[in-house]
Image 1: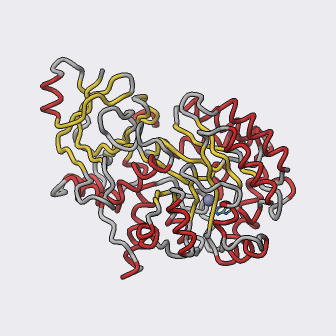
Image 2: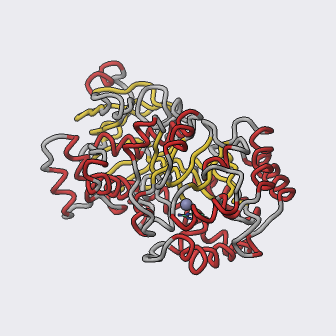
Length: 434
Ligand code: GUN
Ligand code: ZN
């Protein structure tokens, strides 16, 4: 057993529903046994109950639950920063040519390492990952996530039109390769599987049916795709699916909109779509840096919340600008602020919730991860800015843990991450890096 002593903050409740969702411990204690938190509270209380356990002293920083990135693309690490193009041009000229390289296992293995270490070194402990179109590259990703100890929910991306021939499959092959990957990796260690058609624009009804067959056969795999990101994309989907009233219905007709589904972006939904997303209890993964970088638009958070749609946060690397969930929180805050009366003011509690527990809920993992309550896995990120850095002085002078949290979202970066744990295992430590 280890007793971690730290200033910690977490959101065991949903701040969009409760005014008291943020829980802070200035001098807190988390007792961890076999990777699980067995007592959570003030250091004094936990110490009194367990006077003899070894203490790991993490004072002088902030300990947060590990981040849950609910939308990130493994084969896009090296296209981060392709700024200034709208979605479809960005896909054609920058991203799909890069993704075509993943037929080469040696290349895929190199990027899998960059990708997984990109996540863990930024404090992300669980991620819903858009894999590669190539089954072997997805295999390589799962091998790497297993080696690193990441909680990966990932799947092979499938498409059968409108991309480029190397990236196309058939419904039969999509089903067979998906089934083989699920049987090999779903539930293995910390890995699980997500059925992943790229988007309706690149999916025939046949491919969506193959996805539905996998969802029916394996009732606890997850589902993810993209929706309503960009005007031209939406228009093209409308032309391709004349039998569907809107974008959501292309997935809905195949039975792919359920509580197991996470749909990324949802920047331009209709009221009907929001109502149906709420009814089916699927999640919208908001990716604010990507939406800004690709000029996709302003995320209508207020409409999602009013309709009762669950919302989580994603980096969308490489449409997004990097692996930092702090940066996504900040950009979400900026975006809502700039929307004036149509925006939702986001407090530090909202940002922390969106970056942690909301993602756990999106993935059906809220019983295991997302906050520091007793019974949860010890998945944590420890921020301790380097000596002499501005962030160090800012945090040292913060008048409260909540203000320190706001400062961290405003200015924290990867170099402030001092340690990351998943299930009690150290998966990243700044001291081991140099
Ligand atoms: N829609 C289909 N593919 C993609 C992708 O790779 N990134 C984003 N942002 N949107 C998509
Ligand atoms: Zn995406």
